[in-house]
Length: 302
Image (cartoon, rainbow, N blue to C red; front, side):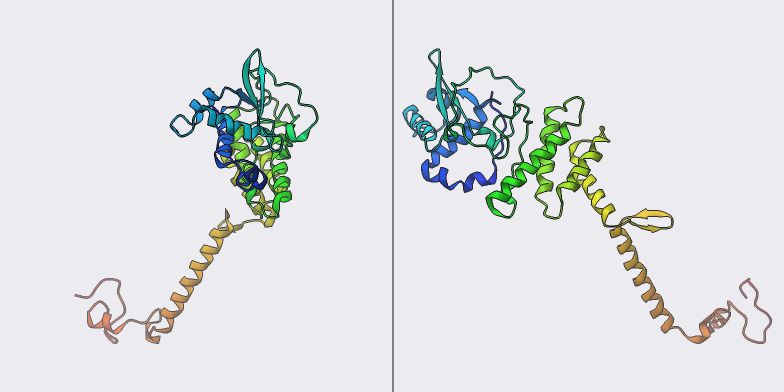
C-alpha cells in the first residue's frame, strides 16, 4: 500500500546524490519512499516498480528501471539495498529515516533484509532520526532547509523538532492517533521555522496543549503566542476588561483622533455660543424670546 511521504527542501541540495545519480534515478528514489513500508522495505521486482511509478512513460521500459535501481544501489550511493528471500526480490531503503519519520512500531509484512554489517555507506546515516530508534514517531520536521546557518543548523533544528515531539508524546499514558502525531509534528516544524520563537516557547506551548485534550494540534501556534505575549508583559486593560496590546493601541489612536476633532471644533466656535447663551438664529426663528421679553421657557413660542 502506497503511503503519503514528505520531501525536505534539502533533498534538492544534495550535491553528492545529484553528481552520482541521474535525474530519473532521483525521481524514482522519491517514488520508492511512497512504496516502502515503515521498515523501509518494498517489493523489488522492476516490473512491479515500473507499473507503480512509470506506468505512463513508454520511454522507460523494465530494463531502464533496472538500471535506475542499480544507480541507487551503487556502493557510493547506498540509497537502495536489493535482496532476495525464497527467490523473491525485495528492496531495502536504509536511509529512509533520514527523509521521513517512521512508525517503527508498525510491523512489516515483508521479510527482513540480510545483515548489513557496520558499513555506514550501506546502512545510511540518519542524522535526524536514529536508525536504531524503534519507537520513532510518524513525523520528521520536513522544512528544516529554511533554517539559516547551513547543514549543521538544519540538522540541529531537525533534531530539536524530533526531540520536542518525542518529549511531548512521552507525557501521554496512551499514544495519540497517528494523524494527531503527524499534525503535531507539522506544527512544531512550522514554529521552528520562526526565528523569533525558541524551543522553550514551543515546549511550553506543548505543555499547555496537553492540558486541553479537547483541542487539536492546530491551536499550538496560538498557545505559543499566548506564552510569548505573557512573557513580554501583561496586556492592557480597558473598563475592567482585558484587551490585547494591538487592540489597546488601536483604541488609543482613535481616542487621540477624537480629541483632535474636538479641539478643532472648539477653536472655531463663537464665544457667544457658550452654554447658557442663546444663539441669534434661535431668537430669529422664534424658538426663544428675545432679550427683554420675559424669561426662557421650555415650550416653543408660537
